[in-house]
Every structure is written in C-alpha cells, then in structure tokens.
Length: 109
Image 1 (tube, rainbow, N blue to C red):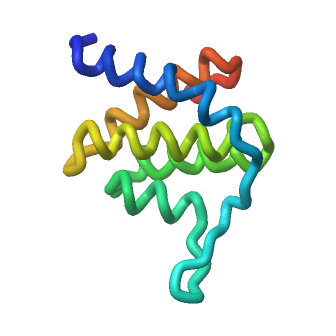
Image 2: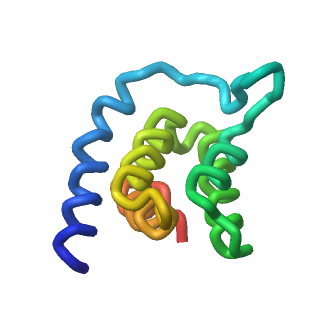
C-alpha cells in the first residue's frame, strides 16, 4: 500500500470518533424539493459507473439502513475520498470504507 493511501486510511480512522459522536440522521435529504438518498449521493459523488462499484455502494447503504454503520461516518469517508481525488474518488472510498468497517466489526467484502 503506498504512503498516500495509507495516510488517507489513517485520516479516515481519525475522523471516526467525530463521526460517531453525531446522532443518527435520515438517509434521505431534500434538495430543491427532490428527495436525494444516500445511494444517490454516493453514486454521483464518487462517480460510480461500473456495476461492481454500484454493488459496493449498495452494500454500504444496506449496512447504514440496518444501523451497522453510521451515516455520518460514511459521509465523512465520502468527503475524504473526494478531497483525495475529485476525478476518481471511488477507489479511495472503497479502501477507506472497507478498512474502517472491518475495524468496526462489519465486513464489507
């Protein structure tokens, strides 16, 4: 694992306590009167186009819906991945999300 990716994962882990401190929020928000789901946010924001990418995002959304992962945590990792590489954020999101979820005892593989 290269140093930058390792640093990104470590930053995501440092953001974990702050993300867990926030209360649960709804997975649906409204923008201009249109409902935007967490799935929509992740797929569009991470520029997921491949079926495997959408499937991974689907697993993350299901775990949020079941209460296994906090939505604030997923959004924090989402933002960190976009900061890391705005053009291709999905690989960074996948690595960070998998690492943090495994530490939380929720396997994503």
